Image (cartoon, rainbow, N blue to C red):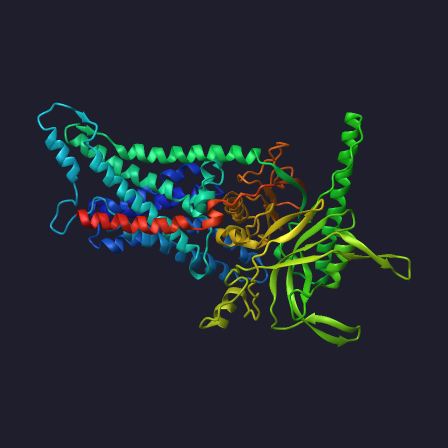
Length: 636
């Protein structure tokens, strides 16, 4: 194999190594330690001498190749949609490859930057490295000339400052591009670099200051510093072993230590916070997407499962009380949930309104299951996902009715139904009930090509290829950012609603923060993606909403992961010591069943810096990136 071949492709190999190391940091592999070193091979490939003289093109290609491998291996759960009756296999492949190619562009832009103005070893047109030896270092060496010292304390200050200037530049631009990816074209916030800390509770706590996007800064800073440090050490060894002080190590390690100490203090603070206990019962039906939207017979079976599971859960709580009484000799009353939570679109025959969305009604089938099954066992509320349809009054064989309006404003909704109350007695003697209150939230952050369909050229052809037909209707975008009220023992707990992937978008959930005890409730359906790693990735991303806002989160998912996440991002209850994740006996999240657990909602709900200021750290990174570039331009 010729040397020219190696020179040409070694950069690509290094870029692919970086992409693979980054994949290992996320659910499915969970080797989070690689987050501190994953970018080093790519940086070496971008900064090494030799190879193509077309620096910008080469930088983009290497960065894009790294990103493409990462996204192809990370979002391959999109292929599972090809198993659905409504999505052709070609559509699933197109979505997987198309999304990966697009998302890799951000890596490519970062690669261009690193290969040009971000290259600490770039050469001038006439040869010779820019700032090969800093002016400060030269002056110090001149001052100390004639001495026999092998190590001087201040001799490396200038070089250390230069290393940190480039490292801050690299990390800042990464944060800005990651934020841009989460915003442009409605955004795809999935699996930012900070999400790699989903199992590293201590390092994740700084998200309440800078958001999960800001957590990307520190590991990227470390990668850049380590690569530059390595070259400095090699150069110093070649110069006769005259090693200098490396202040960049002190600076970087200092930042890591500060983040670690902050994390420890926050974990302690969250554990000791005074809280209101909300007892929840989560239902996970594990219904396949084909069955979820099957015919009326199938949907009735789905409703019957929810009704049966609620009854069995209450019976189980009663048995536990009896067992505790038998063991202790004292009477123990059965615990009852304050709220029962169903997943996204659990009640497929759900809600309808006419004119004003405040004039909402339950469709007959949904009304029956709520009144006589889900609310029948106690004085609890029910939170459920449902479609919310615009209707119109029509007159038919059964009299005047409210029917769905074709082309109306429909919403993907989350609703809270209060406890049922007696409303009278029928002629047959049967007691009649009404639902006490109905509060509804319409999803504000819709998924393009999934929940709404942009009016683009060749729309019908593209959608027919993706879905096998041209979808005619889209969900409308909700407009309200008011938290929903949940009454717990006569006290209000604010519910921050999040439907589907909204729990991965911090800029949306922070708009619901108020001065009251609050918890985040996410209802979702990842059944589109089968038993893939999409569900675990979704949970990993969702954890950071609880940390960013210091509000606990409850997740009810159709196929997993249904769980309770505390204000520090943990899923183990601090009081009982038990995991609050719904799994089967084998530990699989893909199961049907229910989970009874405790949500500990802080009484004195504090405003975090992220809740107050949002993505302020991204703005700072913009100034840092351009500031470091200007300084470098002036010095050169």
